[in-house]
Image (tube, rainbow, N blue to C red; front, side, top):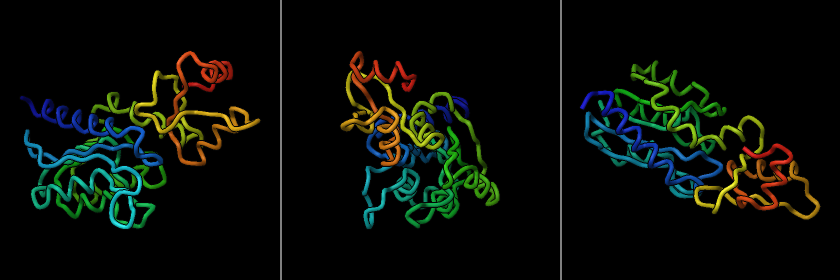
Amino acid sequence: MSAQEIDHRHMRRAIALARERLGATWPNPAVGCVIARGGDVLAQAATGPGGVGSAGHRLHAEEQALTDAGGEARGATAYVTLEPCAQRSSGRASCTDRLIAAGVARVAVACKDPSELASGRGLERLRAAEVLVQADMLTDEAAGLYAGYWRRLATGRPLVEPADNGLGFDAPFSLAHEESLIQALDRFGEAGYTRLWVERGGTLELMLRNEKLLN
């Protein structure tokens, strides 16, 4: 197996880990992380559900994987589906700082994070610490994980999609009494929702489609 094939196998595993957490981590994006040396996986993790961890903090994928890998992480590669944070809203150590402290030799990233807590700053710090950074690995395969997250960052509103059930979504889209579609979208966005669903073929889908408010 070539080095590229090994890289892609690990990143696809990280993507799969993140996909399993869709709908369970908002307002945070679902992130997957695999720490490996060559073809051997040392540890893997995904973003924790809300409020999990010390003092109620949500556990990030990288910090969990690094904890599990322990000293084996030194000199290894971390495969992460979304750019590691450069700052934590909770004030805890950022994933960038944790990766540097753990001594990983390389960080492969699928997608960039335009939020104010990342936006390239983490990658710059990794490079400054002489960690090899490989960005945009399997971006096309991972991008679907963050469509709703990116939409809320850009517009303040969540993505709404028709579906047969709510699997993998943050919540169902609904209207409060005498609320307009735009008001509802703004309400959900302010609450931190990133990806909502409406019943396929239902009234809400038709209303949103007529207003060109569906994905």
